[in-house]
Length: 115
Length: 115
DNA sequence: GAAGTATGTCGCAAATATACGTCATTGTAT
DNA sequence: ATACAATGACGTATATTTGCGACATACTTC
Image (cartoon, rainbow over all chains, first blue to last red; front, side, top):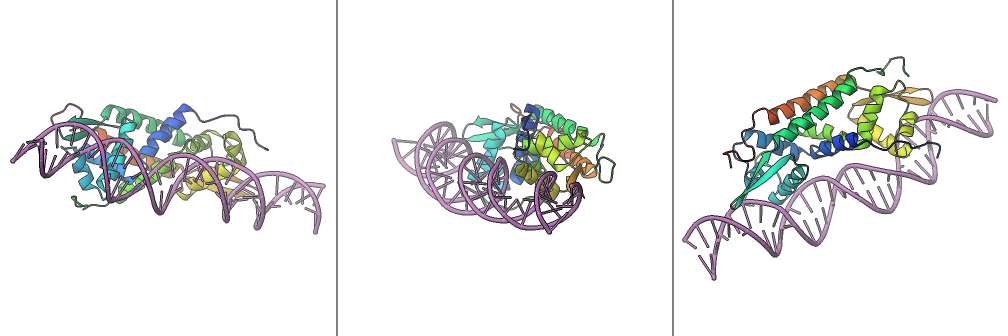
């Protein structure tokens, strides 16, 4: 052990990674885009639009719901899923802050003096 | 087989998911943050700051490099990793567009008439 | 050239993600 | 009540990710 491992990951890093993981599958990206544009957001309708089986889509819905990015409302026999717009805006801020911090003041770029 | 699977995932959805997957691990988030702030970006130094073994960090570096989010320059015995700021800005735009489209005009929110 | 250092690749084990069929539950309609 | 529809939970098979030690390579230094 030539190296000392001093710091663990910050809560901020874990939070960003958690949300990124939720978006790390095309189906979940598609689900959010669907919910943003469709008037109806019934579970079965969502599944019908995706090239995956209904149960698989249901799983993806549960993952998004577990992070509270979407909410599900039971309406009789069907379930209506909606975007948690408020949380999505917060997440957007987090990503924006992360990217801005990463690109704002590049001290080390290819060819620069740092290396 | 009650459902017809008409559409596959768009290239846009896959691209966003690909980048999101790169950010879906705290170590990779931490690496990007490190590269953004440190003057030096030598592989070994990066590994020393993370609570992971050197080989594991090397793997995460390769993953980021595969997406061209970071670049590696061999400088004699050491390797200097730098952010691809240009690409990061593009990615930031992609995420911003995605989130904005998702939150801009919420037709279906909990309690609304859509369900 | 011999010794030492920095790095990436390889192989492996464990954990996690993905996809889907089957089933149980719950509500609707006849 | 009986039959049917929509949904999520469960089990399972396969694929991918994660983490790491051992090794190979390449460069530096003596």
